[in-house]
Amino acid sequence: MNAEAKPYRLPGHIVLQEPRLRFGSQDQRDVDIHPMEGLLRFGPYSKDKLSAVSNPIRIGMIAPAGRTDRLVGQIRELDQVHQPRERKAYLPQYRGFESIFGVRLTRGGTGTSVELPADLSDRIAASPTPHIILAEALTQALFALRNLRDAYDVVVILLTEEWKAGFRGTAGDDFDLHDYVKAYAASEGICVQFLRDVSALDYFCRCSVAWRLGIALYTKAGGVPWVLADADPGAAFIGIDYALRAGGGRDTRFAICCSQVFDAEGSGLEFVAYEADGVRMFGKNPFLRREQMLKVMTRSLAIYQRKHSGDPPKRIVVHKNTEFRDEEVEGVFDAFPNADNIELVHVQQSCGWRGILIQKPQQPHGYPCRRGTTFQLGPHEALLWTQGNLPEVAGGKDYYKEGKGTPEPLMLVRHAGLSSMDDLCRETLALTKMDWNNDGPYDRLPVTLNFAGTLATIVKRMPKLEPHSYPVRLFM
Image (cartoon, rainbow, N blue to C red; front, side):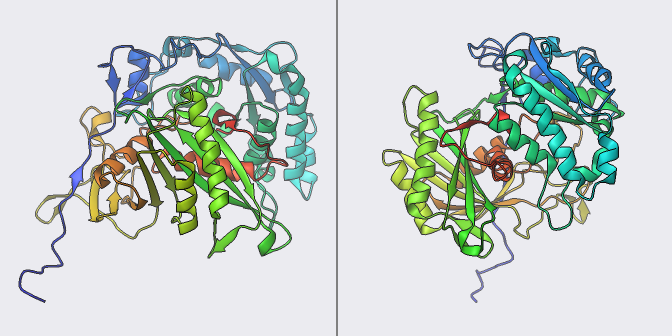
């Protein structure tokens, strides 16, 4: 090794600026990096759009026997003002649903409030398969609402801790009540919001509950709270994930491939689910053949064109949480022959790297390294810290959403594409702010993979996949 080679010297890193969001204002300067502060200042993005949600948003209800009034009280509470009692550096005052979103909440029409049988708790406690008893009760209640679809926009389901034994399957049974009911409701075109008494009705910070539930109901009713402010025009972002549906053996399993499509603003469009038989397995991961990937990408292209007057995207970024095999790469390129640039990015969640911020020599900072820190390992690999210290959303004070621990970065590995790794990191970081189903400043994963993973686990429980796209709000 010559004297100039110093392997302990690592290349410099950069810290990306926190991505900005756009809300309801028509002024291009009206942006904010804080999701809820932006809603308070400018209202939701879809407030003045032709596709805005109905006013009022009508809520259907499914509740335990004798608990409907409690659920009604929770919905009415969303009209009140609440002060934060947790995360005070980040969480702003909640000013009431209509004040924030510009539309009202009301109960659904006649017959849209269903109480479950009074003996349900006893039956669940006595059954060796409590999850089956609870699942049947909830699906029967949803079945009763299916013919009243024009009388409500979202159905809120209240679960009590008395039924906890039915939330998961018994040993060896891959059952999840949330996913099972979501799959059934989605097949009927019903948007569902779950509430648990301990984490919603009885939670000590009513401000936190109001923000989370308010954003979720507005989104599930068809609203768009915010979009990305600094987007690449003509870009489409696609997330791919797989789930396995067991068949008779290893070679007869079906791969449920979910492809979630986002436009340049990071606004979720729809998703497609593709059931592929004879799936190839490498280790524990399924991979699609060339023709299978072509079908998935062709359907994704159709979603984008339907929402953009028939225009195809000029640039496509595909995120996957496993590597791209050669046949999958070829299938993607077959589907987009006229694209200017196709970026295929493996977003690896576990990479073994850690990073801390050294404030002074031998003095580590009390908080993790900054969110947005990037560190390029090679021409096609980079580390990206999507978790970390984010004082910009806390008035300049140190703020780490996770509270404790040393965040692990994502590793971005590019299998095709022409953009700089810094640009790919910047886009990935921005997409971590696009999950409309929570009130946090960011998620660890970009929404492309967050949604695709959630969709795949739910869709595999659907008895039949139709060959059309689905609104993502049905599965949130």
